[in-house]
Image (cartoon, rainbow, N blue to C red; front, side):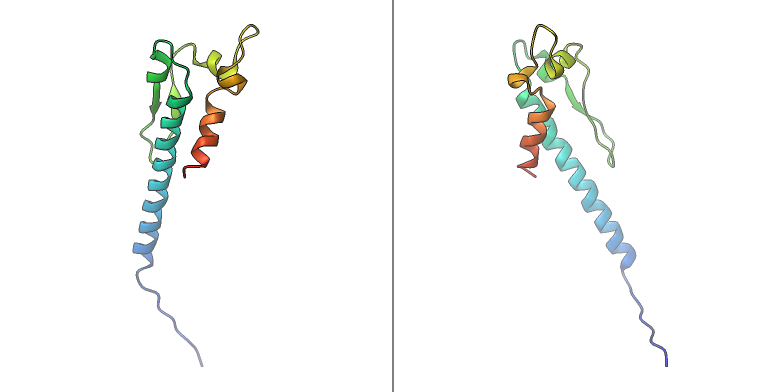
Length: 100
């Protein structure tokens, strides 16, 4: 005696799951972008306005090409990093975790 089970709709279910994962990645990236902007110190607003999200669906990245942002993030021998030495990305990630 044999038993045969037929599963239907699996392709649609997998497609829907992939769409949900892609949406989640985008929500995380959007939230992280907002938080990075919020944790960037503002004197002129140039560093804060430099934050961008890449358009990659599966692997979005948050980038800032303003030349002095690495100094805000890591500090220098004469200046500690932004946000009481924590930089920008660390506090932004901590804040994002609480919002997702």
